[in-house]
Image (tube, rainbow, N blue to C red):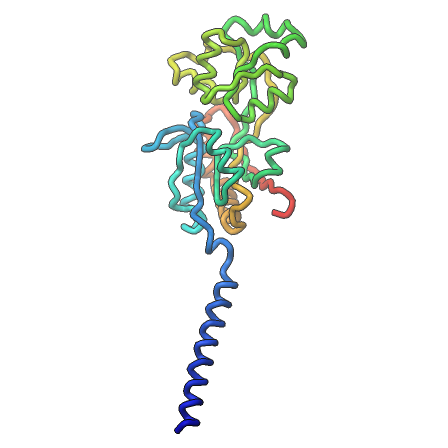
Length: 277
């Protein structure tokens, strides 16, 4: 009987060890995505591409993101709410936190090294604007125009573009609407912004689109969805495949034409990742 009892104890202990082994093995087999927090999706108030508040979010890129969400799994962020936040806050989260999606983000060589970019979602021009009737004078300044103060949306790619083009005196404000008001109040003579948002920004502050005029085009600007580097590969891949789907089946072009009827929808899909991603 003692021998049988010892055998029973040994078998019980062996079963415990086997269960522990399989539990540890199962943990090791789980992908990093299984432990990841839910994808957080941020955008900004930048009409007509993205705009809204805590209760309602809308815009061209918002519709694109929702069309993608309709085609991906819950684990990849299908049910995640889109949050409108100040651009500087969203951009800081993108660079520092895991599982962040921020849109739309202007493409640049520097940004391609700091995030995973998927798009393009839209293509705009980065343009210098001034008050109506002032463009001819500024255009005749030649290189002296570089000495003038330029107003820009804080922490935006428009700040980077203006600096790259030789403008050094740049005054930044929290929103494009504030910058536009400062231009019209003659705080400065130049405003750098994306071309297709200017009419909406001016409308927001009670002005007509022709209250400003173009001085010069500084650059073409591609806008992307941007994922933080700590976002799981499976999540990014799901979004990439869904973007390809909506561009192929006509959904993307339909949304683009609705919001930007005078623009041509970009139908290519490009993924820009730092080395090793």
